[in-house]
Image 1 (cartoon, rainbow, N blue to C red):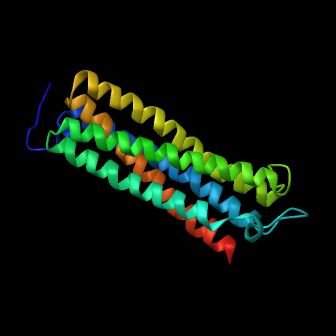
Image 2 (cartoon, helix red, strand yellow):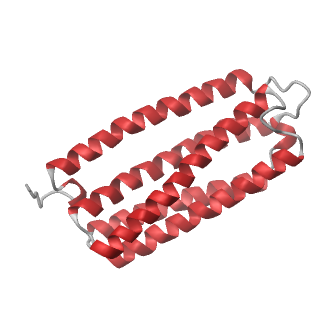
Length: 198
């Protein structure tokens, strides 16, 4: 195993470098998925039929909470990676745990939101607008849910094995994924919610 100590632990082997490159390529595919969802949303956002419009169903308070929570989780995952790089595994585990708790809080609010949409008659069958809205939000929510399980798995691995080239690599890749979800949410917040409330 070729160890290179001039680079961060997550880049310290050739395999690790390839894993990170492969993940960037995967994120490119994810960008195309969300780009397709956003494009579809912009095509269908005014096709409300007899159903409600965004202005009628969007509530600013839960959306602001979701945004603050997710942006804070982006900060805490950054702190986790910083702690990892200075070899502070306990601090890293704390920040990773906080990130996952914030992710769970975000999901809790999103579930509340989906229940609210159902009660006001905004379902997948209501209109083209509600169908693409729920599909876009649901796809992002599914990614966050997957991220929670993935992050929990990494947290358990670090507790068991400590910080190694392998666990550092997995943690760094997870942080890229989590930051990606935050960037997608900024687009959702700006172009779906804020634009829809106007």
